[in-house]
Length: 324
Image (cartoon, rainbow, N blue to C red; front, side, top):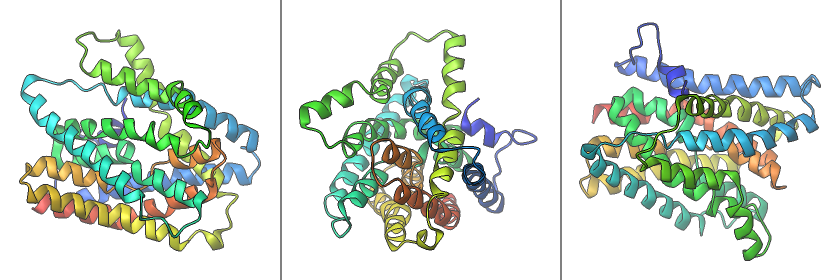
């Protein structure tokens, strides 16, 4: 079962339509994230989940669960009628990723190098998979979920190429070798091929991939909570986190909205693109920082603060898009 199905299958299987229910629905998703973080925080404080267990879980997530999650995001059925619209969505998402790369050149120069790496990666990618798809479906329905899935493809490509290279300090040749042998990169390559292939995997294989991939959110948020347990909470409300959150949650969606409206893009495609760009930092940011010796505590704080602030910004943006 997909993450969106877990959140969207209400008593009658109906997605809320009114603005009030929409806001409540979005907040419920975000509160579940905080509960998962709290579990990781609690079991670490109690000594149930130690450093070695966290290291092993991080490896399992990065090398097994995450590739399955990436691959299943490409399992989208494309019809001839939808192909043109999906091509537009793909182009918009690819363009947005190029925009993020440009922004990374100058937005974070004032910060120390170890923080720059985290903030740049958190700009390239966000939580559009776990949080984004359910929210998009709640606002735009089945068409929205299709466009939202296509929006994820360029993000997956950039986060495991240009994004992953931010955390590696080796030479270009070694860097390329690390990238091309990383399971997540191959998940993107195989997923992209599968997207346009007429061949479908047997149900038992596809279902296994989906089940393993669906563990990503729970496992990664528990790890984030564990990392946060070692952070001095007097430093959690860091100005750098608020600076990043203002860019990620407000400025970037505003720019995306203005550009797409200016060039006359379809309102549903525009809305999907804006919501996808308005999601908080992805949990994998902290896990990669931990894996590759980056500033994992700072990455955990960015995830925590941006998700906390999105309790306000996401419902507001969703209601505005629903009203336009």
